Length: 398
Image 1 (cartoon, one colour):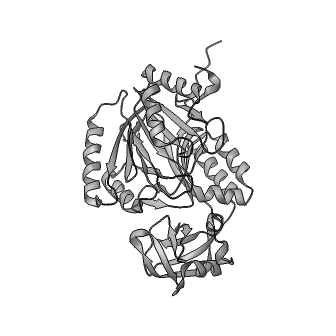
Image 2 (cartoon, rainbow, N blue to C red):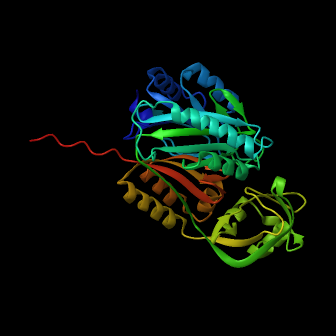
Image 3 (cartoon, rainbow, N blue to C red):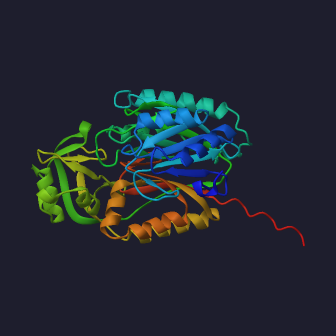
């Protein structure tokens, strides 16, 4: 295949990118990969603006019908060649290094915690009794789970908690599907079947050592906002401190309510304290009635603290350097980065520095409407799984 059309990493994982749906080289390479039978799964992150779900599905049937795949719409794509928004990024996992079992949970807005747990337990049992094409490690530290979920479902916390409960000792991470910041409809596809009110879970066994990690870059201030009227089911806050939510938030961050935008929310996130740690509860948008819609769960009586981002490039670099040292060198990272971090980096003119870090450590992934990490659904965070570089081949004796 044309070496300029794709990137192959040390473990055999391949990344392919397309700017337009009629990119013949992209589809030719993806088709050749499908025919080779080398890959256990293709993981595809795509912009709905450039690659509508129905078009992507038909292209996969036409060019790569034999390749199992899971696809997720995004707020933006990260990594691969031809950087920039509005792309399609395909990540191919070789079957001699990765055994992957994907399944879909439908109707997540109504299915409930117990039914999700029951389904995941059944799928896990099948996965654990399905022999991989390579030997298992004795400590079972070779397994992880990925979650791709409708980022407009408003049930990510419940689904993440149910997955964590059912998966037990299998670590979980993932990202919430986006729709290029339109906040209208996301799409997820599993082997040609598309939907939005769903989650795709991938149970993965890897011969490559890996490390799951997260990083964020906000510090709490002394400014507090108490939720006094809300609609938790829709993640809408109507009042802070018994006043209109948008006006009270704007007052707390020193802005005119009429000027509030995604940039405002990225620059002034709200956090909640849980078990001694702070977690982001990011604002999605201002509604016409002055209420605020959120990316994460909210409820009456919650005390939110205004936070200020600080040192994004520094904290991100330090997190990657720590993981790199721990696993003896990073081959590539599968990463899920909050869309608001991207907006905040642009505002602080840190985009080039962040992209340089991601390029240096071969990050492949997408900008999300939320991030999953173990049992938590998060905002304003990067979650990732770093795979170790293969050991160097011994030099032949002289």
